[in-house]
Length: 207
Ligand code: AMP
Image 1: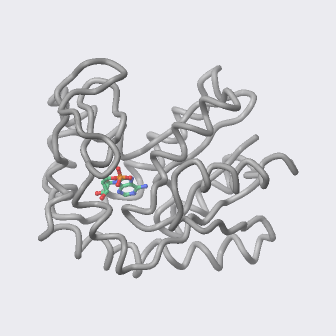
Image 2: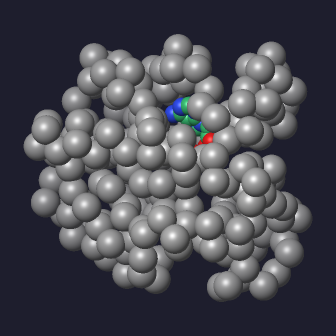
């Protein structure tokens, strides 16, 4: 099962990816998480990516494509994987097509006006990468690993608008791209997390 999650920032890709991957036993590959790890570790790539990420822009295609190419060649990906936050440009999608065949691209659809509220309540765990929302999770520490939660720099209101503009300009066209390939499915992301997951599971059961 090789899957892609499409959807604007704040649509719930990461939350759904965590839940689905745990249920079906495939790795959750988040390019955003991989970049944040590089930033935490202070690597050269992390240092290069920091300014772009904090401004809400996109890291260069070549860097991202190289990262994903290496990751999906690892043994745990041999029975499938879920890509969250990749591809984000047509160039990335073309590169992915050249590497492997994807079974399904799921667009998690949330109205634009709901995205800002969802992002501003998001809290992230620096330890294990889990995400929480203040509307459903009042604690300041992660219930999976105990680390103190934080607000991503790029979740601050001044950056969020730019991220949504960047999504509309660069990533939204991928919906038509995968529709043309005949593998696009849509789910209504403006529902409770378990209801969104149920829609996704109904789709993946057809694979
Ligand atoms: P995310 O956690 O998916 O929202 O990603 C956080 C940030 O990392 C994005 O706003 C981009 O700056 C960068 N990023 C993540 N994935 C990609 C990608 N596929 N292409 C370019 N930049 C990316």
